[in-house]
Length: 97
Image (cartoon, rainbow, N blue to C red; front, side, top):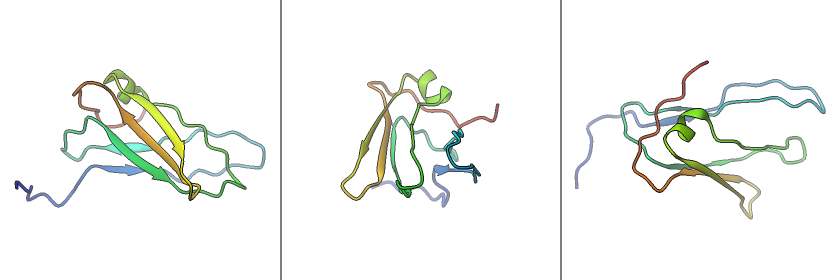
């Protein structure tokens, strides 16, 4: 089995966002490859559904790589997001616009 000697892996982060009641805000889940070649990934969001309503959309970088977004609400209330495509195109890092 091959193991990389690198200690940093691809990461996802969600910046702090402040919103007021009944106001919609956009927040980007930022993806940083950290040198990894990732063609698909999955992650779960845990949040208070009595306070937030989340509508997920795919970002430009993943869409440009020919990926799609699928979501599912898990029995524990978490939102699972899967970004993938029927190709081996690498998803580039999220870029500030």
